Amino acid sequence: MRKPGSTFEGGVYRNNYSSESHGLVSALKAFWGARGQFAGQKPVRFTKADNDPAFLKANRSEATLTWVGHATFLVQVAGLNVLTDPVFSRRVSPFPFAGPERLAPLGLTLEQLPAIDLVLISHNHYDHLDEAAVKWLARTNAGVTFVVPLGLKTWFAARGITRVLELDWWQSGEMGAAKVTALPAQHFSGRSPFDRNATLWCSLLLEIGGKKIYFAGDTGYSKDFADIGAAHPGIDLALLPIGAYEPNWFMQSVHVNPEEAVQMFKDLGARHAVAMHWGTFRLTLEALDEPPQRLTKALDVAGIDQQRFFVMQHGETRGIAALL
Image 1 (tube, rainbow, N blue to C red):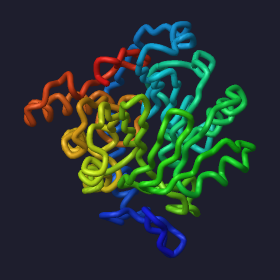
Image 2 (image 1 turned 30 degrees about the vertical axis):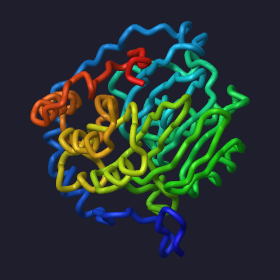
Image 3 (image 1 turned 120 degrees about the vertical axis):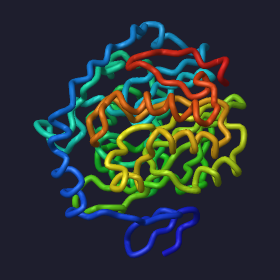
Image 4 (image 1 turned 90 degrees about the vertical axis):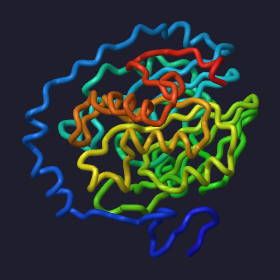
């Protein structure tokens, strides 16, 4: 069955430009063989930036960006409070006692958040969709709307969350003055061994007050970003992943490395970008603090000003009016 925007065949969704997939044997080869590399890494200690939750709670006039960690940002723009892929739990796993653990300070707690108007969900992996967090957000924010890719509305409804806008690639929806468009990404979905690619994954474009903020979600590199840049010129700020890429032969189909993130930035034609998806959970083999170091080198090679593609500290709040 062909759906407008995305491809749905044989009960699963497919990427536009690659359906490369590695099975269990490849995964064991990639990670079991390199378990010593994990054990040999020196601990990285990240400090939390000072922020002002009281200001953020009251703020409805200043454009700000706060990095909670991983792919979770609080975006305050044009009087709207937006969260991306809200993950606040200690572990990103179906099990509370096992799985990747948060290794950096949580930039904000759920209780420190302002009233949230809009939540952008890129896909259903545990490090991007935190069940406890979305339940808390739905319970404490009566007016919040969750924007999700195809197939995820049912998951939310099963948890009593009904203010959900479900979108296919290239499809848009409006919430008051805000417009959100779901766009392609090169990735996959699944929360168990039995539902791989049964729901869609996406990147998302938020347009409000004449400004465009792009959230890449989770992705490998593909021609999708040139397509997006051509269809949506004038992106003011792009939130782009730079981590979880080693071993590259195994991860490149689903996660970009810093050099590919710089190429994404160029393909999108964005004015500015901020790095995400690094330094919070150890998901792959590179050192937690390696991605921003490689990003600096990649920007130098590309001749791009470091201020145009910047890195934030966990918990940091940055005014972004000048970027927009």
